[in-house]
Image 1 (cartoon, rainbow, N blue to C red):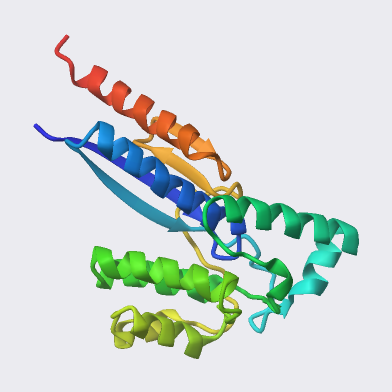
Image 2 (spheres, rainbow, N blue to C red):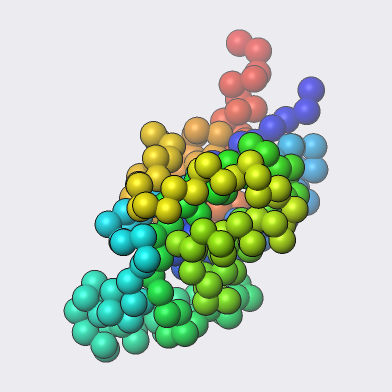
Length: 220
């Protein structure tokens, strides 16, 4: 009988640590598969809207973070921290270039619907493209036309997405298991890792979850 490992990831598109954590998870999965080629991994992504109070048109990014962190020096320090962590996993994230802090409700609704309508390849492509839209391309994830164009570029038919794009800042209702701590990685409902932890920490959690599963499958 083949073994399985389910990974549930809780994230928001505007959280740089979620994209960094995604890369760390990918590195961990490569190592895990090399050690356990018989284990089938299923990864499920759950959207979490961290800032439902953001207006539908978004807010100026610099103003938002200046209010959130207190001053320009703290903002620069945070930007440098993110840039360094991103560079370590091959990402070129420059927060100083982002113009708008978007309301991500419709982006999450679109991704959730696309997960139902599309195949695994389309889902992964869309997830990457939505992250890139915000962190790399300076696109507004609160814009309906932008979201539909992104979905179309990933092969997801827009017709099935139109009714989920409310455009009125209605909060996104995600998984009831979601918390405000993102990224959060849950392995087989046995082990949980919170934050953009190193790949080795994620690998250790995956390995321990598999061991617990194997122990439970042993005959009494």
